[in-house]
Image 1 (cartoon, helix red, strand yellow):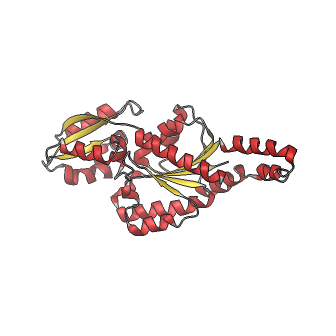
Image 2 (image 1 turned 90 degrees about the vertical axis):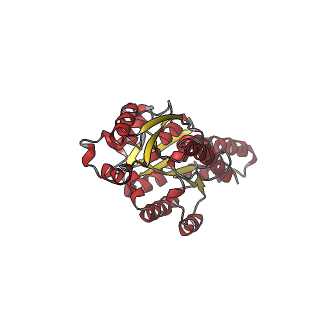
Image 3 (image 1 turned 90 degrees about the horizontal axis):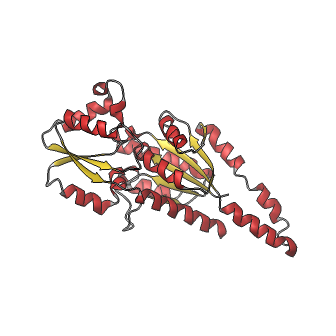
Length: 289
């Protein structure tokens, strides 16, 4: 059974939940348990998905055992017998129509140090490649922009797939994913007429749900540059597929806090779903070879 691993940024957890909830061919869904996976798991369950959750050291051996192709190899022993060949081919086709997915969600605050972020992305990709038929990096270029990381990723034991827009460009970051591509991102920036802007999704503003937000590290980091009058716009990216009921309130409070004007703009799940389907289709084809 094909195994697709997804190494994702916490910023894109809503997009990832949407993608996984639409795939009826997922037979087994595994999630690496860590400090930031609880909310993601809750969102999966709200979409009637039932992930198996284990720490990484326990999960990888379990996935390998669960996905072992021993039954397929057993049948293949008899595949040269003409009367059993058709049975084997039918079994193999049905098996490849199902998918095992493993998700490792990395915390969003890794972005505070880009070198550290890229190191973590590569180290986790290298580890998960040992059990994978392919890896989809649910990251923009921020997760692997350096040439060294890109070269290292190409040297892994399985193919690596990226989030791409309709022009086949790798997306710049999570905002580009939410808006629908790098060109849309650029056009949205132009709407600000040179004024400083922040681009908000539910996950970008999720820190505001924390108790005593103003004492959090995320607020202190934001305050360093958002207190400048240059930043006066908040582009609120709306998408009816977002599940965060606090988004509208958070956006309003954030805009008030930093004296910003809210500009509403439409988002899309197209890049997330199209990139996922492309990775999945490629893995299926590779399994047939």
